[in-house]
Image (cartoon, rainbow, N blue to C red; front, side, top):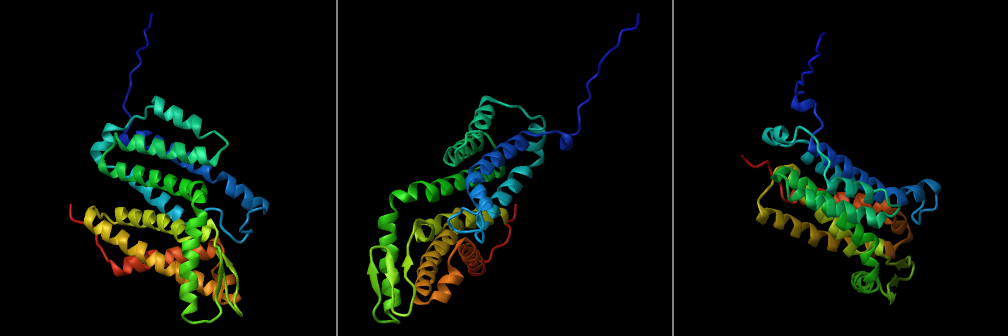
Length: 281
């Protein structure tokens, strides 16, 4: 009688599915579910911004790419320790929550799962998880919570816009969150164009860029975030002022594409004002 013996050979670590691969896959699934509703609206042509507006913000894509790079490039020690993927109850629970037909539930689950993964990871992987959690928080703020304060935040932006436009033009009027001027265009300040909606996303993408270039000094990071918050507030009021001053400017600057280009310009400006290099290990 011949007895067959089975031997097990360990596969190289770089060819195994690592635990970080599972985390990345689940977090991306959560993002896909979170963006599903605006993407479907855009494809059907029923989006409030029209077909010309992108359903996913360009800055969100930058954050996702950087976060995935941080998660997919761990140290050699971490790669060896996490060479074999294991599904725990947190992973299974997150996968089940990501299947719910709700964008808010998907972002809430994405943020919670990212934070839970950050607690058991190295610094580099933790930064990637924090970026995903920050993205989820920004999405929840811009799609759910900002609507609770939109009236008051809109009034604040409208007052500053009216004040800025009154410096160069007479007859500027404000009625609630609507600013208008003679020979200009009436600007209605909704949640999507508020300064309080733009600043959180800019802070997140600025932190992501700083993590990508290797910046770890919290003081320098705080200075960069303060710069972009101040510039974003001034630039958005200037943008709203131009939109109220002319119908041509309103057509150019209004919409998701104009907002995305505006935000990318803000990030480029802050990077130019605060040049940095990768820190020495």
